[in-house]
Image (cartoon, rainbow, N blue to C red; front, side, top):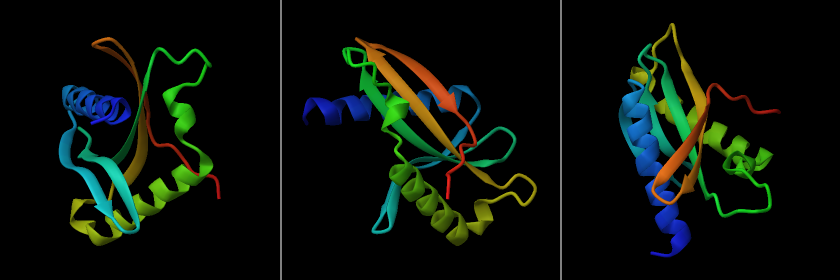
Length: 126
């Protein structure tokens, strides 16, 4: 594995640990279909189905770029579409009262330590 792949895998592992610690139940990881992919699908403590995109960067980036900056408008639209298609075909996982949402976990790694920013219920501009 190259550095970028290894960093991404470490970031997703840290993201899963973070979500579990927050009371989330992991339903699926690295869901991939021809129409899109979703890093983590989880249920929150209050029964909301959360689709989570994980973005990880090394702190050695001196250009001021943050992991969350990697979520371009196009990536957000593809993420939203994949979540919508998944939700439509897995209605048994959707709580009618709570619905589902899109989250982004932005991780910055410094050696073995991760800094995590959790953006909940993000919206996609049309």
